[in-house]
Image 1 (cartoon, one colour):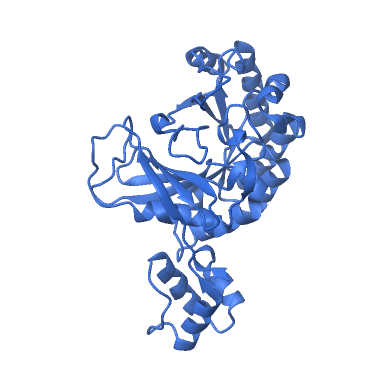
Image 2 (cartoon, one colour):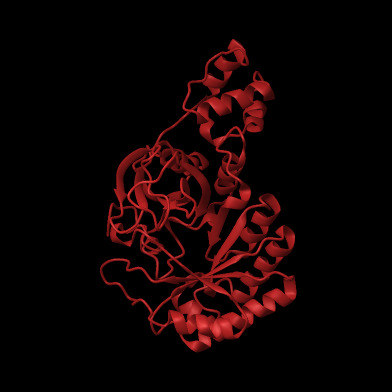
Length: 361
């Protein structure tokens, strides 16, 4: 059966010939308002019956909702009907009342990045498009007027209603390894009858799959791209990202350059600094050289996002670097701006790299 929260009106009208496109728009909009599929002044009884017979609205179970005590981040542990567990995170934005949802695309992950808790799990399965969409719908359903601390500098509550402004595919899993479902979810996120989220407020983050990067540019050209660099020194990158043994950084950056030229969007290059592993001046200079070469090639400067390492549980192999200022200084001396990204919710294992399908580490 069709999962009605994971189709666009065009999908529904194509799959159920008894439903016109105009009726499909009404039906899909009703589903996303949480209303039943029934006849109305705009939907014939026969069309409503056909849609209800062809589709349903499956649900995820909310196992745990854990709010950070140190910032306004909230982690959601969800369970699929088959018992698979995965997590999403509600991220506050600076503008009051707006949040981004960090979603998972897989249960676990096969890429085994050494600084990521999800990578320790291995891959159980891909998430279906409806399971990705439902993560955002569940977070949205929990947003209430006056009940959200929406700014990193805000007090205990915000004023006015809250809404989902954006989505980032940076939860559990490698999105480009489940690209059919990810692209379908993006179509629903963007659709005015679906969740109505601006494509430019959606970011897909990857460890570096060149074919997937190029396909994303072709099929979702308004969606932003983020790539985990780890280090621009090949040996250092291979040491912490096994995917680098199959896709060299040269090949990944070439695909990112194609994405930038196709879309006109600046990619985000993310680097999690690990003490004594990838935080040296040589790493910073190599990153600067890559970024400057990328700009010369494409006319677009990558947005360099530097992250503090977050602990990933027992047997943690890494330590947070203290060289963030020095690393940024090398980039600055090369004429490159960088952003130190705040990764919240670390006390409840909601920060970057910590998601592992549990309420806490």
